[in-house]
Image 1 (cartoon, rainbow, N blue to C red):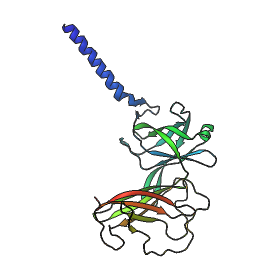
Image 2 (tube, rainbow, N blue to C red; image 1 turned 30 degrees about the vertical axis):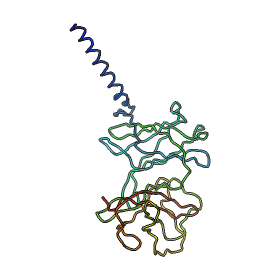
Image 3 (cartoon, one colour; image 1 turned 90 degrees about the vertical axis):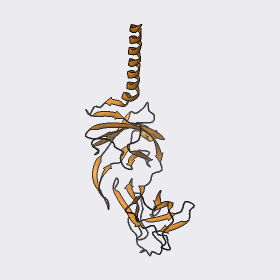
Image 4 (cartoon, rainbow, N blue to C red; image 1 turned 45 degrees about the vertical axis):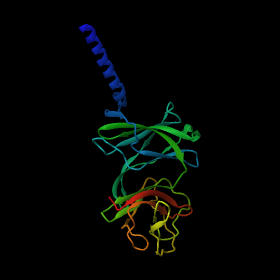
Length: 272
């Protein structure tokens, strides 16, 4: 009876260990780079893809990296890509640079890349296994990549508490490509509009302003460069009264011609 119990206990232990290994160990893999290999479920970056006029696909990483590794500095990025998870036959590598983002100091930039194989030109969407290498880890995550309408700039808006009485509002503008004939019709290079959730405007940066009638460039100009646009807001409306506590909608606009760039986010007043 004791022998049977011991056998049963051993069997249960083997099943438990096997189950644990199946559910937790399956995420690890042997990296050819001799680093700790880990397949993660969530996105580390978000990949935007644009179908260009010659039918090639331009890939661009947007937002900031979500890394939980010993070494946070990214050294290499590539993507195994195809039209389905069973057909990741092409590989595209990205450059990784440390650049100066105007007004924001140095930042790490993942360069744009072009997927230009015959498969890419016939594709309408893609699947990618994206590899991110740091000095300590080789991370891989999968993303279904839907194609977006090609935009010259990709805007990442933000509203960050600068103090107890001030919120810094703006956007990081990453150049994807330079549309022919793009320009600014005046000296106003960006605009911020703050509204209540129901749509009533409480403040806007161009209220009461006069701008020079002049032709200007939309910055940045070079692909993969980042421009940081921002301004402080002290929580006052157009009549210089402090707004009521609550959530507000922020619209960020670069008034370019022939097509402006726009992005939205939300903020909470007072800042936390």
